[in-house]
Length: 167
Image (cartoon, rainbow, N blue to C red; front, side, top):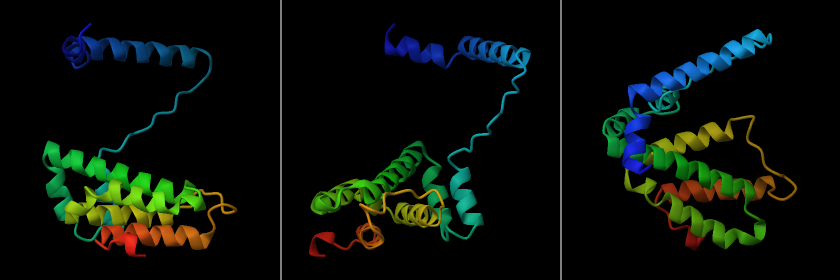
């Protein structure tokens, strides 16, 4: 099946009806075995910045919401989220001997984020939330606090437009 035909089928009512029927059947089978399904309500991409603004973590989110109003802008916000999360993951996992590669990679990943003030603000909010999270896991025997804090500082400096090669 070619991609166009598959795309039309996946977005069709027939596919939705079949998927819903399969889910209803699976739920019935689980309930028949005494297993109660747990339902998760997924947040939309607009809910996350709205929650950050409500918590006071996103000060000028009107720019972000305006950017998210178009499909291209929404893709930019998604890409900025991914780039920031990837930079944070690198800060937690890159070996100390790979510091030059780390700095080069965060510059590369965050370059599109730095092109738009709303995305910079969003990236800073993501960093703040991550640092305040109890789920922030890293191997402290390899990535000690000083190295990790230095990497976070480098990420923030990239977002501020400071050339981290001079550090």
